[in-house]
Amino acid sequence: MQQELLHIIAGLQTQKIVGKANQVITKLSFDSRQAQETTLFFAVKGTQVDGHAYIPQVLAAGCTAIVCEELPAVCAEPNCFIQVENVSLFMAEVAARFYQHPSKELKLVAVTGTNGKTTVATLLFKLFRLFNYHVGLLSTVQNQIDEEVIPATHTTPDVITLNALLRQMVDSGCTYCFMEASSHAIHQHRISGLHFAGLGFTNISHDHLDYHQTFDAYIKAKKMLFDGVNSDAFALTNKDDKNGMVMLQNTRATKYTYGLKQMADFKAKIMESDFNGMLLQLDGEEAWFRLVGNFNAYNLLLVYGIAYLLGEEKTAIIQNLSKLGSVKGRFDALRSTNGIVGIVDYAHTPDALENVLKTINEVRSGNQQLITVVGCGGNRDKAKRPIMAATACELSTKVILTSDNPRNENPEDILNEMQAGVPALHFKKTLRISDRREAIKTAVSIANTGDIILVAGKGHENYQEINGVKHPFDDSAELVEFFKLFQAN
Image 1 (cartoon, rainbow, N blue to C red):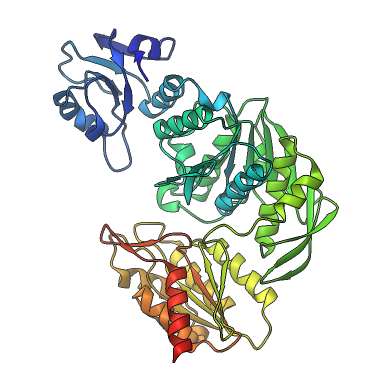
Image 2 (tube, rainbow, N blue to C red):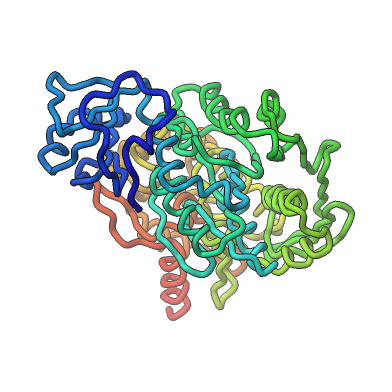
């Protein structure tokens, strides 16, 4: 892809343009290591690194076009410096224009909220594939164009990668794309400049306060998505969530609601439930779905509502949706030959953990133990650590506190902060094993026939990050290995 710099920035708000602007651009980048000749480099001020510090490096690499908020002391030709008020926002506008506004050439639907984004986006992708559409997916687990899988590194890609992927989807014939929109991505303008056909809101609870600082700021970040959408879109929100209607307050989109409890445009009711799925009355029709739990009833209802608002027929949606299983790492149920049930779930917030544990407790019988293995990630929101431990203890028979992804923190420090939330009456049923593999092994060793083991926090992840290094690690694989080991013995 090749365009004139003057054409790329024509009509966009700039403060000053210094130097030679009539040059050819073939690439956009905010990574100084990727900048070279014919690259337009964006000096982004990030939370950890300021891109302005790398301007000399990109100039030395042959890059001659730079967008910045602060001009260097010397701005000699043939270089061109474009000074703007906000580099991140300007980059979003340029990326959409450079890739010829791909979001306008398909129906792009974004799902946001604390929990459920991956499940909803993935189920929508699978559902519309069953409808024989060409479909794109942008999710935490993976990005996908029909059956082509593209590894994902973030819940929502950076704005340049995002537009490039959308262009690739359009060129591949996609008519729909379903994506997760994280609060970080919304706040950092990673989705600015995109045209949305619709938005869905799952729920909001305690998470990412290491980044947003306050819960109010976290809510406002989510709400920015709804505030910025055009009037030709729809916005579907969870009416049962206490902040669900907040999302619709200033939106120009057509407003819709869904819920299990309150009167809403789309309604559902759980009729029966076990570890194999649930009988759900969805918009007046009953069907058996292969997902489990109250939280998944909300997810299914949101998927149904979005599909209906996109023009699909009610009965066809329900029939096809009932064929779909759970998303990897989201309430994945595994069974040993001697009758132990293992459940792997991505639950890494207090609310998500509580939902999963309550779902298990609704299904399990009184003589089945519930053994929970749970940790908290390093270099993330510390306030949720004692809450997570307290929640696990309150709703489990036994709890093993362990490492998640400690990243650059000392695992023992994380466990100390978790253990501080354990009430004295639960001390006896709580173990502390920092090695996650040993923790899972111990859970299997103490489980009896019929017991349930929940391994929470990492879900689909196939690694454990320790001191900046990602080591191969898969909770499901570990469970299966120890099921076989203890069955053999």
